[in-house]
Length: 464
Ligand code: ZN
Image (spheres, helix red, strand yellow):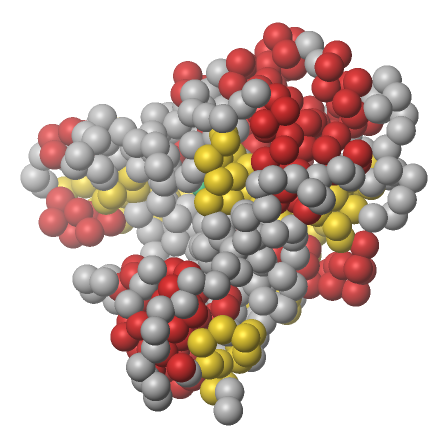
């Protein structure tokens, strides 16, 4: 095969779809988390098919504003009811254990146990997905119907897990082209037993690498990154900071196996070549595409598109995270994804690569810009005129250790966190609070409070 366009035309969607489903089924039962043997086992399976370069970064290593956490490995976890019956067991489903749970083995009353149990009253048959990476606690997730049926009386709880110094693992593979300029395809590898939100992205990325590997004429070099979400991208950026001048285009691959149509979240600037290439590629394939401007939360675009890096990275998915009822529950299983959807997603990624290689998207009609000027009349000297500079612009600063994130759980807390992320992402000296309000749709007052909290924490400085 000489060009990517020809590889796309020749793509055997049935065979590729079956192969991606097989890979997803193989990876599905592995108990993954942010660190630990589940990630290694996942990378081992990927490495059978491509020469993956492995990285292990020791606990405590400083990476941008973060530190590599301790490594977590669960061995067993269960709850026995007063009759001695195991009612919840990690061995049955890896979503049963809250990720990064600390070890515990004790008897306790139902009332003592309840604060450690998580369920979804609105979806009473599903197990939710919960983690507590940066706050030491333990917990179990279970169907609400089961939780509601637990009898009073003494329960025995056991979590045998190690949380100790070790390392964080990621893998990457570079497929060289005639130029050193790189296209990054990034997938997270930290979710346990969830099919669409994780395994679909891994399967599409791996098959894309194989398909591109069979093409003889490649201009770009393609880098495939398989890393834990958040901290993995932060580590990769920290380690590759000096060579980002070869970074040309990037896509985040996730949620690619459900029955929904394609969705693209633009890069921070919104008018990069990757933004036009995706739109043109999907139009060429005859696929509908819903596009959306950048916002500073979601997957690892929040790191790649932090103002210090501001890389041209978009997110090409089917139904985006959080917008399907199966998301982050046990219903995101292998029956929720299909060979047909995965094959269509692989074609979309191949078509995008073909478009980038052909380099003729510069005059494409779809040129939407995230930096659109839609100014409202201003009240002079209002809060909205304030402008800040983010003092930790490379990746997201760790808000948790500064007491700015989570924990409190009060009403509106999530909105306040989102307001902080917007202020941090847009505070490059060019955007006033008024501009940020315009772009985020958040009230100026809330953004002003978020800016005050960030100023107080030393993360921002006010611009004259
Ligand atoms: Zn997720």
